[in-house]
Length: 96
Image 1 (cartoon, rainbow, N blue to C red):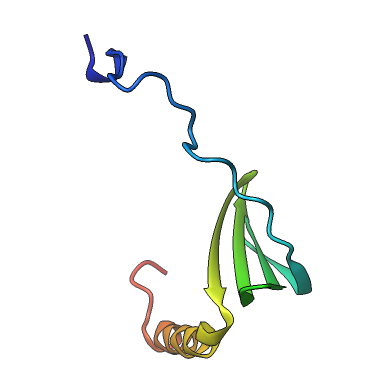
Image 2 (cartoon, rainbow, N blue to C red; image 1 turned 120 degrees about the vertical axis):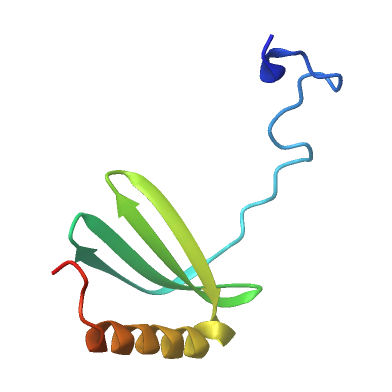
């Protein structure tokens, strides 16, 4: 028997053990998208009771992944991204 086929000593638990979290009210301040090759990136600046944040969602053939950057970190994120762009432009590609 494979280990994941054995019955759990804890019984069948639902995926979330507690009660579901109530939805958080979010306001969209700005949203825009960018198509790069086969990927679509959606940048959405939002605000909720906890503050402002930027959600970057990558959509590849219906599969979505997101990252969230709190507004206080946007300037540092911008600096790091600008540095990556500068290095990418200054470094020749190994496989042109």
